[in-house]
Length: 77
Image 1 (spheres, rainbow, N blue to C red):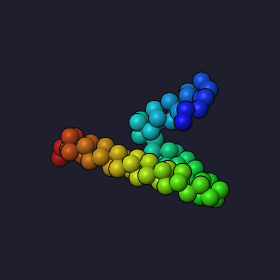
Image 2: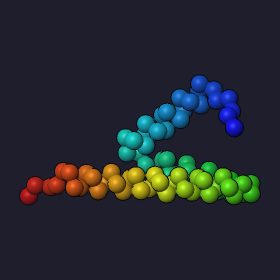
Image 3: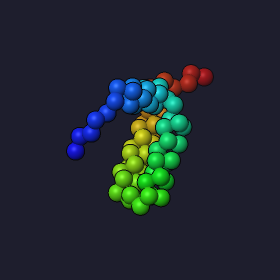
């Protein structure tokens, strides 16, 4: 189901994705945790599970970026 999304909401989403891709994982993780708890508190468990899955994906992404950086740019001693 499609919903109407305002241009301000789209801008906010783009800003969040850009921030995440720049390495600001902590803020995104905190927001996802907050949204997950909020969904659980309102008994919207399906939404909470989807948010949890996205949080897990974002964690794997962060780990892959770190592994890539370590593998691609080793420290020269």
